[in-house]
Amino acid sequence: MKSVLNAAMRKAGQLTRNRDLIAATKVIQRALSGLGKSDERPAPPQAPAGPAATGDSSTGFHFPHIKRPLGKVVELLREAHAHPLYASPPPGADSDAGSALENASSAAASATPAVARERGAFAARRYACKAGARDYKLYVPGLQAPGAAAMRGAGARPALIIMLHGCTQGPDDFAAGTKMNTLAEEFGFIVAYPKQDASANQSGCWNWFLLKDQMRETGEPRIISGITREIMQEFNVDPGRVYVAGLSAGGAMAAVMSATYPELYAAAGVHSGLAYKSASDLLSGLTAMRGKSNPALAATKYRDLDHAHRAVRTIVFHGGSDQTVHPSNGEMIVAEARARIAPGDHEVQTGVSAGGRAYVRTIMTDEGGTAVVEHWEIEGLGHAWSGGDPRGSYTDPRGPDASRQMLRFFFDGPGAEA
Image (spheres, rainbow, N blue to C red):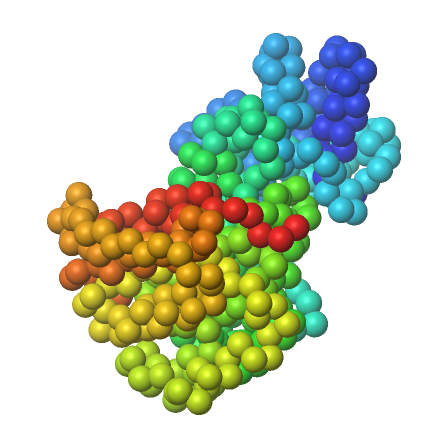
């Protein structure tokens, strides 16, 4: 049994469609009460009471006894039933909702409240396949989040963004620095942060420079694409609104993912990263970071790709004072992306962020007028996420805000192939 609450919501949803709200309400109350009895420890003084106390034991939250007025349960039921994240049961979920509810009390200790959640959840997960395994963190906005409410109103399925951290970083650090969880609440998308394993790279870098990790269906691309598909299937994600982004080594791996899985990702964001197949080993990787590419490698990089005909829309950010990854690498990403699209308009804008950083923004469109490549060159910015929160590493709060600009670019474009 994957989740008692999953079963409860499916049963309650069926009753709601049959206009039996009283029975549906009792189903939800019974499930919530069963979860509450699974942990009789009092909540710590700083823990919020009532609805905000719901959570997942895997993330450090516990379930105090839950009691809600009838009206609140009905309201919550309606919201959860309409929420696009729960429009269809996840794969492998129990089909016998009634028997699941009968065993609610005994199973409550292991149940995950995937539905009827009022606040966002940041959960630790692990994915494994033949290519290997990686931990990842997943943030799903709560039912009461402004973005989730807007999605419900529009009847839309959620978008998914895969965020790939830089060297020495991890999911929590990267989430704090990019503020993507906060933005997920605002806009209603799901965001996942795969974590590089120390056994694969002692510095926690994605291995964008190794040939085995630059190929479709092998190595790290296979693992990251598997994480992406797992989340898409479980949370009913819109297949045309799946994106990948990253910083530094994560940015380089985002470029790898967009090149090797162009049918999976509608757009990519590369911050302070390198172009696909800029290197073939560690030594050539270090050389590429200094801005010295391998012409022979560059000439054949797309030759063996099955999906080489399709270029993924790409937005690039790079600091003019980056001493770790030379700014010419950002220019190379832009040049390659532009070479693979039908030529259109080319616009150059200049400006100054609220924090005083000057920038040059270059926008390239296709024949239909859609922005397919966007390049932000930021004066004085080092090797850091532009506009990031200083609570995270490798951030520069002076802006411009790379996170918001990436989201704007992602959501303004057409979707990927279904």
